[in-house]
Length: 94
Image (cartoon, rainbow, N blue to C red):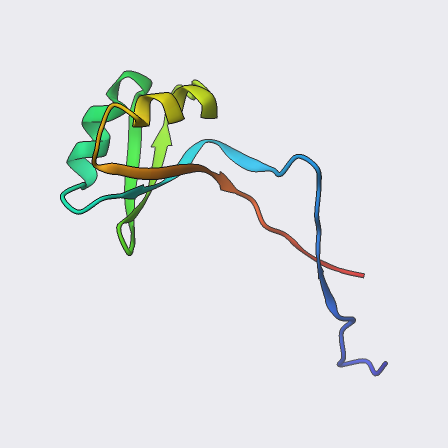
């Protein structure tokens, strides 16, 4: 290995994936938008909603009730297709 080369990248895996507390990636059905999400999750203090494109939004909550509660709340709207935590991905050089 030379001074300018790097070892191959490895993706770290874990039994319990890390995610950013209070942040979720929401995929909406046609007709779903920021206003839909702001109203649906208003009880948890929506601080920010970012449009990620392809009908996906990053939603940040001030009070995170946890994934189970958020998923249950999502069932109240036919405009929400899916929701997942904002997982943290890391690349390790080893």
